[in-house]
Picture 1 (cartoon, rainbow, N blue to C red):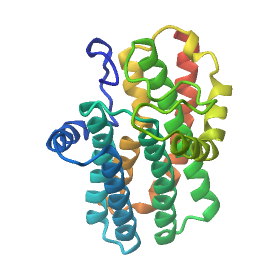
Picture 2 (picture 1 turned 90 degrees about the horizontal axis):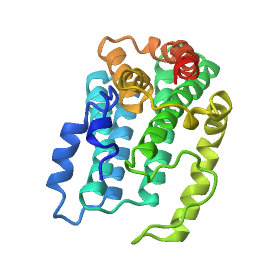
Picture 3 (picture 1 turned 120 degrees about the horizontal axis):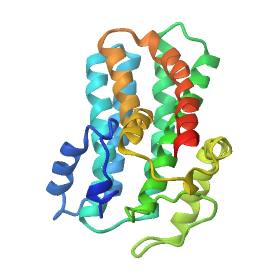
Picture 4 (picture 1 turned 135 degrees about the horizontal axis):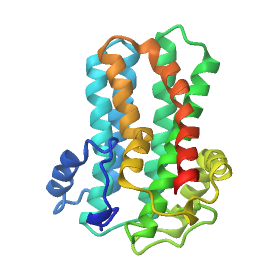
Length: 254
């Protein structure tokens, strides 16, 4: 199942790795590889990128950051191809992302003159940006009968799908709420009526997709390629202004 029906798809600037991700997923279709295995691979890729950043191997770090982004799309693609959607995979993916995001920024902090408070603020900003994008995207997916493994409101433990353990879903959901709960609440307070409004136009979702994790990793990669790692942390703090711009546009017109 696709995340959105064909007629409702928009240009997702954070999803540049999807074509390669589909190739990887299709190549694994008839193997014993599961989406969880692919998620484990993107964790390894992210960890290698962090080690490379700490050792100033920026070009190699860029490769593994982009590869991580591709694999991050490939696990979901494999789940759709094999028709094995799961809450286990959905929460494990998200938990892995937020932990890797923190350690990527801590690695940048270690090699620059940024202070730890700016680094933590940048992490908070990145997560808030990503939460707004996911919030609007999931609303869109639910309106048009797309992939609904992600829910608009993650307020209670979901019932495990076929082939997965309810116990694992319970534990992963608890961890997900612990790590993401505050960001979900903030975005909901800022725009609690988003799900009741009109459908978001494609151009609007394309703009908001600059908050997607794939695009965030691309921005980090660009600064690393240019040998300007010191700009990564302040950029994400400054770019958070757009949270209020996007929410303002949504409230005024949609």
